[in-house]
Length: 426
Length: 162
Image (cartoon, rainbow over all chains, first blue to last red; front, side, top):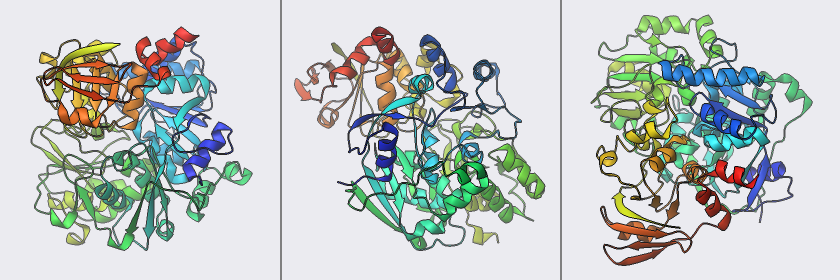
């Protein structure tokens, strides 16, 4: 029986010729990642195990969840991680204000830290984002992070895969976010439980790297262990842009699945049929066509996060908000996902567009996505958000509501004060 | 090892945001986390839970965030075992690493109700509903996983084997 892309990457990192569904293997890791919530417990655990990291250049630590710190307790978490990074001389520690700083899953691809064929774990469930580049990446908890920081290895149960065949071309204003929400609506929040989601089909080539990052980011929202795209000309161009030296050196591996792989399930999606999609409270699988729920009033819009905080997202938001005004009853919060995104938006005049439209512009942070700060909801409030989860209480009060959407729907909704589509405002 | 207690029964897709909301993640101290366990889903849980009690839930328990604080909060609250139809992947792994016993058993989830007195025998994989006088068979953990749980988690297990 043939191997999937994921299985080939795992076999390579385990030093095995082949692996099969359900095998327990130990794999070498190219990078291990933690943030200000998950790294401090891992650092404490690592201390009990001797305290040394396996490779100071392969541990990445990013303060992004409660930063800039919202209170004393969160400041202590950041301090713990900062002191550890300095003591161990961790080269991939990104301090606020560093050129490379931002939300972890925005900066890691942009800083050239992930290439095709890499195996990465991160103590953050959205680590699966990096599958967009043809890497294997998955989320773990703090104890697994601690053990991996010490050894550079971890164990995996080899997953089987759901194959998602993308066909055709998407319509205007339809983005990767609509595609992944549409998929989760089809297969459910446990539709890929314990499995890889492997994307293929001619429609892949119609998707930008940003679309792919957004799609893989939410593989976890279907229960997936990872999401992964094949390596193509879009991937090659992205690598050339973010780290020309590594790209030219050829230090990466593009794996392709065998033709005789047996998938647990195959889902076909005609991109031309994917509508502007929203997920209503309280599950990402509770999807509707945006135009079918336009009567839903809202109080807030959030544009940003590891799902939709990239420069293409910010440009898209600006193109819709340009010359318009945010509805007076709405708070529209724009969060560029990294310092580079922020700076580009500044240089391109996009921040000015948001300012004139009546948005507030935040420094890069996960903030409101997890109800931490910078846009927490009061009871009964409803938010259209480009983030990734709409669980009960995720963004604040337990009776507040989140409607997940792509950037075009979020920006249009900010202007009209209800769920809206771009064609209503353009 | 055997545990027993009364059952808290919940539905499908119980996510880590309701198990322990992110607003409380400025600490990883089990004693501080446990007072907010299940708060946004069942505000009475922390007042009613007693040592040994058992959570029974539907599909995809623990979906969402990778926060290890979720199994930590459940374990610290006194819960001795979580039985579900299945678990989200990261939660499953974190629970073993934290020494929180978890079992997958669809029949038990269908048969057991809120408030039932239930006993679990981990070696045999037996779930006994004493209120209804029913016995369910779950797949027991392989020995190495059971040893991690018996030791109280991966760190203690690793130290014990060092």
